[in-house]
Image (cartoon, helix red, strand yellow):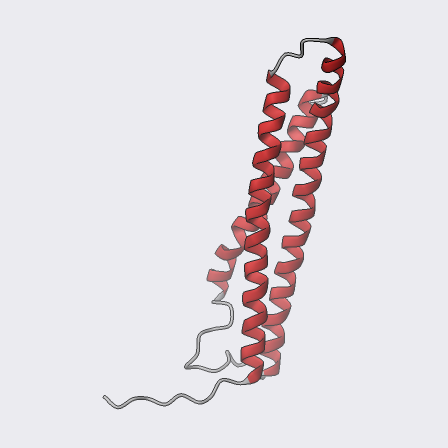
Length: 150
């Protein structure tokens, strides 16, 4: 079977694919850092609510930290969610811009799709969004439960 020669890849394809890979990697990094940060917050929070303070002064500080840590963790989770969501919107814009620039065609046939098909993209996006939301709702529940609101 003779070697098949493919047409050269357009600059638009290279640039768009590079940007998509960059944003995909950035989203994945944010999720990893979110998980590491939340692990720290959960560990400290667990120690604060299960440890007994020996003096009244330490008890007050412990109560203060038990309030501050969930709020800080919640803020981190919210900002990460916003950052991930903004990245996903930008990825969609890049893909649509490329599709528009290539007159609605799926691009250059012998080369990989820019960002997978719709089914692939939906599964790629579930984890970064859901993990942020899980941490947000967990910390909201803990804050509301600790303050007898829930």
